[in-house]
Each structure stands twice: as C-alpha cells, then as structure tokens.
Image (tube, rainbow, N blue to C red):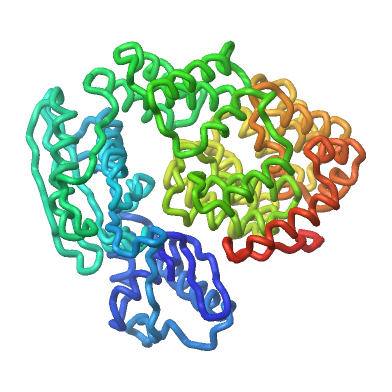
Length: 598
C-alpha cells in the first residue's frame, strides 16, 4: 500500500482508495494482526466525530471489494464474530521516497492547535506551522509534507505519518495571553509512536521570528541521526523571507483570509499582502501571494478593475526579489499574458520533452500540464492517471495548483459519480468555508437522484451564484423544467458569474447556441486561464446528461473551438502515441475513452 497517495497495489493491478478507507487499512496494518474492535477503530481514528458503526462496516466492505477487484484471491481482512476485524494477510507499506535517494528523511507537519479562547489566533496557528514547513522544506536531505488540511481530524501521529509516507510527524499547540504566547511542540516517530523531541516556549509575540527559527533548528538537531549522515550545521535553513515582524504578521493574515475564498476574503487578502510589501519591499513571498490573490480574484469572479495588471506587477516584483515558485515561471507568464499561450498540442510536446529530460527542473508540473492537455482532448481516464502521478510526486505543491479541485471533475467526467462525491466531501471536511465544494457535491447528488442530500447542500449555500446554479440542476434532474428556466434567467441577471455557469444552464434549457457562446467566453475572456478549456469540458461532462454532452460536442461551433486549440482526431491519435512512447517513464498506457452513456 502507498498511504501518501491513497493507493493499494497487487501483482496485477492498482486501486485508488478514498482517504477514509486508507486510514482504516493503515490502522489495521499498524496492529500487526491484532484484533480491532468497532470501538477502537472509532476512538483511535475519529474521536469526537459522529461516525456510526454502519460507516465502519461500509469501510470494511469497500476495502474487501477493492482487494477483490484488484485481481487478488487473498482474503486480506478477516471478521472475528463479536470481536472485530484483523488483517489476515501481510500488507507492505511503501512510502514514496525521493528518486535515487532511499535514505532521505521525511516529516509531516500538522497545524498547531489553538488552545486559547481567541479564535483570531487561528491564523497564527496555521501561519507558524506553514512557516516551519517553508523553512524545513529548504533542507536538501529532508522531505517535508504539509498536513495543514488535517487540522480538524485529530488523528494519531502514526496514522498521519503512514498516510503521508513519512518517518516523523511534528505537531503542537498555541495559547495566547495578551501579548504573550505559549507554544508547545512534539516530534514523534511514525514507526513506534515514540516521542523524539518536545519543546515548550513562553515568549512575547514580538519574538515570533525567533520562535520559528529556534523550533526549526531544534527539530533539525533531533533529526540529525537520520539526515543522510549530514549534521544540522551543514544544512541551510531559510527564514520566512522578512526580518520585519509587522510584515510577517500581515503576510500570515493575508494567507488566512485567502483560504476563505470569497470575494470579500480576496479583498482582505490583497490589502494584507499590499501592507506586507509596503513594510518590506524585499519580501518576495508576499509579492508572490499578492500576485496569486489578484489573479485568482479576477479569474474566479471576473471582476476587479486593474486586478490583472496588479497581478502582473506583483509577479514581476516576486521574480525580481528572488522568489522561486514551485511551478515554472513560464506557467505564470502564460496565465497573465494571452499572447504567450501555446496551443494544446504545443503544451503537450513541451511537457513530454520535460518528462524525457533527466535534467529538467519541471518535476510534477510536467504531469500537471499533461492533465490539462488530455482533458482538452477528452481523454479523461488518462487525465486521472496523470493526475495521480502529479499528486504522488514529492515536489508537488498545492499553492500553485488547483489539482485537488480538478481531480473530482475528471472523476465525474469518467462517470464515477460516487467517487467524485466522496472527493468533494473530503474537500468540504478540510475546508468547510468554501461554498464551491458544496455546490459541486449538490449537483452530483441531484444527478444521481439523491435529492434529499442535494437539498441539504443547497440550503447551506449563501452565495447567490452557487445556490442558483445548484437549484437549476436539482430542478432539471427532478424533471421540473419551468423551475430550471427560472433559475437560468436568474443566473443571467446575476453579476460576477463565471460564463461556464451560464453555459450549463443554457444547455439545461435546450439553448445550445447560447451555451456555446458562453463556452467561448469562458475560455477566451481576458483574465481566464489557459487551462480552462479542458477543465470546463470535464465539468460539462460531469454535470450534464451524456445526451446533451454529445449534442454539444458534435455542434459545429464546438468543433471550431476544438480547432482553435489544435484538437482533432489526428491530434488525439498522435497524443496517445507520443504518451505511450514514454510509458516506460510514466508507467501509464493511454487508450481512447469508451463512448458510454453515464
């Protein structure tokens, strides 16, 4: 099993699991053949959560089904009547190691727990953890994973470590009293759960920078025996990027605001990042975040006078001050300047060239670029394969990626609606403040006839654009065409609505011409991303009935849009051949998607 990417493999096949199933499997494996009761599974994995015994039964059943569909006849999970479950066959955990460096040390960093009553300190708990992540990630012989998304799951350190495939887990807590803080940290070994190092720090908020440097260095000292024979003194720990506490505080507040992903939150984040760079013009990370905030505001909401130009200026300032993004600078350039964008074919050839070049510094970005290209071409099963490679890459960085939000769309485009629903549910659990996730899940609930669940998600939506779109789909799949038409008209009258939303409701009411006009606008409008064509194509296939998708994609205007991207059957065949030529590198064999009703 490979916990870091939620995958199990036998001699003949590999199966992707949802994260909850992997947690149960890792838990059973960690017991080394001992019996796990329903109570122990619940208490050790989901303490404090409302998880019924039925959920655990379903997890066990799904795990057994996963093993059976992987081509194995072995009974891996045994039921002991009135006792519980145990792993009846050996399973080997395969943490993902850095290529060519089997002795690399690895660590997962959890966010600090806010032990105080001041909710405003949440930003500092996340911020300190991310700053430690940033500093330690610059150590050449240390692989660092962010477990920030697990802040509310209260998992045992060994479960966290096994999920990410790391040797150690760093966790802690923070409590504030006025201008004083008490921070406590502990570093645990995943292999046996033993405490490797712990530290307690009582100091003033004015010494926040010193705290982060002290903790990072003490963690390095504790890890010294496993750092590939190198002493901590020989490692390079980069700081936060600024020596000004006010600039750092504004930066952390901006990051916290940006995570809420609303229009108001974007405005707050931009204000904080602008404050940070005004205080310290050499603060490269703040310039880069300022670029991201302006760009994403423009892309997500289509508004913001001058946002795109502000994003360009901030990106250039980040480059000038020495920022090294996790993606190639050319990707940022293509986002911001339409005249630098390449055709789908050119993007594919470029990515394949980087895959084949052992000296390329693109890393997982080559896989990510290929997911967009494959989605452009409508090869969604292969898109998922390459998305898996991207997510499994040790260098993948979600700061510059929408991968976690794109994968559920690609999954639904393949007709795997239940799995896509589970993926959206996982994102909701990690980030309940994002209305987009409930909007997407509600549409899939409606599509699969789970209207009661859809209604709960729709009721929880405050955003008019999300609520109206979800209602349109819910009405359509319940056969209420007049209500669908009303929602469509309401959506047309709303401001700041992404054209793709109108594309889908145009299609629902039978106006393909209007839908295709909205499609063209969604992929060609100023400020839209050059990756939007394939993502919107995947989203359309996941949301709309296959009969409408077929009619839409057979329309001459859609074929014209494909031609603009350089996509036709000849290119599909060439793309498949070229990717199969490098299958020894990727391990993926690309085939045509089956034409089947969903």
